[in-house]
Structures are given as structure tokens and as C-alpha cells.
Image (tube, rainbow, N blue to C red; front, side, top):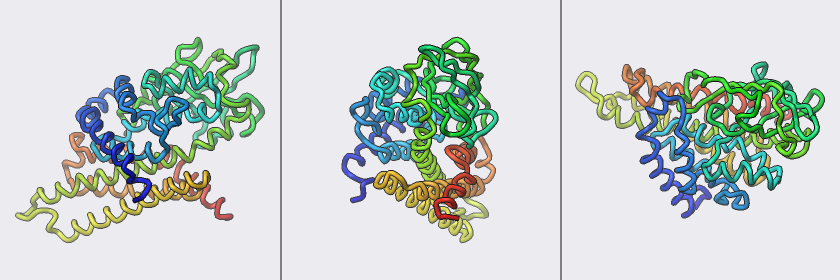
Length: 379
């Protein structure tokens, strides 16, 4: 039995499947139109013990690890959820790990526990209008003034930025370069902290995304995460988890499209015969299935390597690019096989087609991943 199929994880998978069928699948279309999830969904998943499953018990979590989080994400997507639902519902997966890692009991009690209980929503703010993947070049400045930091700058493309109660924010407290970066937890509602209306996106429409502006916002010094100047290291350590989460979304989305395509091809008739009777169609499906299996296998192998070694940067980068490329191919083929219906908003594959495109950008672009891989290979 693999570590993905223990009795406990089979039970977790069934729980996530049942929650998705009852609490997510019937409502996704409405959330897509509204552009955000209801806050109550966080509480529902928290009460079921699913929201916090991958966090240590000592901070209010369920005591699992990233494989448990991946299993939940898989089941949400396989059960008719969306990438936007996963990104938004589990935004705490990128907002609070840095706080947990810092070991601050005060910050854990004020932010992590309430978030894992479904009472608060957190966001992570790193990307800025002037740059995306260049984390070491960020410009949002935090200047120490007595018992506070005065923050000035802007962030963009922030997942859950509209609904978040707090934002774990990358700021520059020192000189240029990665050594001058720190993390601050900034509460929504502080004077000078403004949030844009939701950004209008191609996909992930059930997930609210915002621009944030800081105009001399005074943030208590007690909200510093870890040591001053340690922010870059904290961010980089969590990037592997985020990239694996993207890979999981990619292969599971591709699998969902494959699952939708097969019965459609059996039912849809052209020229008096089902589409599944055409050899060219069957071969398309065979290729889609082959690629999904490769993406799933690569992603799970990367998870295991990362958990076993604490490193696996090369494997994670390869898995992300592999799974995302597979997802793009499979969702495109799914739309093609559904024909005109695949182009309609009423078709689920249309939504997955739009959602898939962000996966090759978020958490590190294809190009950044290839550069990481090349450097690790010594090229």
C-alpha cells in the first residue's frame, strides 16, 4: 500500500469527496458569477477537520502533511469543483506556513489558530506591480519607527485579497537584494491600507484577487514573522509546497476533463455512430489518459521526494512543468471533443480550459522552473 492509500487517507478522500458533492459542486457556477466564495465555506471545512488537515496539532491543525492537503485538493477537482475554489478555500496554505515556521506563539495564537478554525481568512502578498517572479527585487518598504513598522508600497494579483482579514506581506526592511526582505502580518482595516475591487480574470473566477496599497501603514513590530531580514528564506522554503499544489491542481483538472469526455463520446452520435467509434477519437483519449498518468505519477513522486529529503527542488520544478503542460493539452482536447458545447459557459470543460492557464504562471512560471532545473543540473 502506498502512502497515498492508507486507511486514514482513504477515509480522508471519502470525506473530501462527500463534502465536495454537498457543499461545492452544486454551487460553483454561482460562485463563478459572484467572483468569490462565501466565508461560511471555510467554517464548514474547518468543522469537518479538512481545512487544517496538513498543519501540526500544536498550532490547531489536524497533524497531517502536504499529501493530505493534496488528497483534499484532488477530490475537490475530481468531484466537480474548480481551481478557483481550491485556490481560495485553501489560501491559508500560502498565508500561514511562514508564521508556523517562525515559531512565534503569539502570532500563531492570533492568526494561525483562528484561520485553521475557519474564523479568519489570510492572504500572502509578494508580487508587486513592477515585478512578478523577481522576489529579491521587491520595493514595498517597511521602516522601523519605535514599536511599529511604517509600510509604503503596493502588491498585485493577491489571491483572497478582497476577503482576507490579514495579509502576510513581503516587505523591504533592509538594503537591496534578498537579504533585506522581511515578512509582516498586516491587518485589514489599518489606516492607509486600501484594497482594490476584485480584479477581472480569465479564470479562477470563484477566487477573489486584488491589488493592495500601503500608504504609511503603521504595523506593530510584534507582527514581524521571524527575524528581520529572514523573509526571503521563509518565502523560498514555502515555494516548493505552492508549486506542488499547482501540479496537483493541473493533473487533477486534466483527469476531471478526461472523466467528462469519455461518457460524452459514448453518448454523442455523428453520422449515425457514437464518437467513441472513431479511431482518431479513441486515440486522442488514449493520449490524454497517458499524459494524465504521467503528470499524476510525476507529481506524487515529487511530493514523496520533497517530504523524504526536505529538498527535491529539481523534482518539484519538473513535476510542476510536466503537470501544467499536460493540463493545457488535455483541457484543450476536451473542448475540441465536446465541439460547440465545449465553447459554451454551460460546459464544465470550458471553465477548466480557462482555469488551466494560470497554473503555468502561478508559483513560478515555466521559464523560472526551467531555469531552476538548469542550475540544479549544473548547466
